[in-house]
Length: 241
Ligand SMILES: C[S@@+](CC[C@H](N)C(=O)[O-])C[C@H]1O[C@@H](n2cnc3c(N)ncnc32)[C@H](O)[C@@H]1O
Image (cartoon, helix red, strand yellow):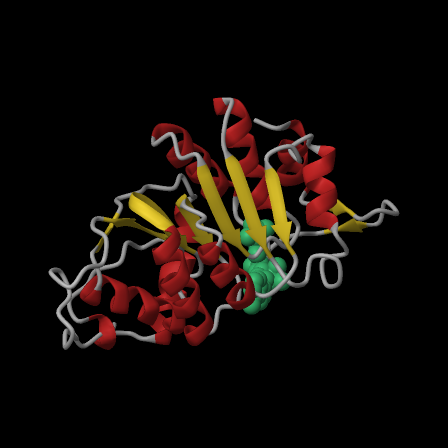
C-alpha cells in the first residue's frame, strides 16, 4: 500500500500546494472501494485503465499504485476541474506518491475527451465512472467507454444510490451485453446499511428495476461479455428499463 494513501485515509486529510489541510471526504472514494479496484486490476491483469472524475486523486492513486505493483499499466483520468475546484491537489498527490510515470490527465469534460480517445484508437480494460452524476452525462460516459472497452473488461459505477445512475445501469443490463460482477467490498456494515436506506428512500420498491437486482453496495461493477454487433442487437431492439 502506498504510504501517502495510508496517511490520507488515517488522517482524513489532503494538503494543497501551500500546505493547507482539507478533508477529502465524502467526495473521495472510500478506502474499501480503492482496495477493491486494486484487487480487480491485479487479479485480472488489467493494463489500460481510465477514470472519469479525479478530484483529490484518491481513486487515481489506488489505480496507479496497482499498475506500479504489477510492474506495468497505463492510467488516464479525465476531470475538467482539477486545477480550479480541486486546486490541483489530485495531481500533486500523484506526484507526491511517485505515481506520475504511467499516468495522463485530460483536464476537460468527459464528453469532449472520450470521442478524441476513440478517434485515436485507444483501448481500455477497466473504467471507473465517477464524473458528472446526471443521467445524460453518465449514459454518455458509458456510451463512449463501451466503445473503448475490450470484451471481458469491467466498468465500475459509483453512487448507485442515485436514481439517475441506477437508470443508466438498468438500461445497460437490459439492452446491452453486460453482466454484474459479484463483488464484495469490505465496507463496514453500518455504512452499507446507511447507503441501502438512502437508496430505498429514493425509490422504495425499485419500481423501475424491471427485475434487475443491484447489489446493496454504493458501487456496481459490470463486465462486457460481447462486442456490439447486428447479430446481438437488431436495428429495432429495445427493452424497457
Ligand atoms: C466524486 S468526485 C470524484 C472522486 C474521485 N473519483 C476520488 O476517488 O477521489 C467527481 C468528479 O467528477 C468531476 N466531473 C464533474 N463533471 C465532469 C465531467 N463532465 N467530465 C469529467 N469529470 C467531471 C468533478 O470535477 C469531480 O472531480
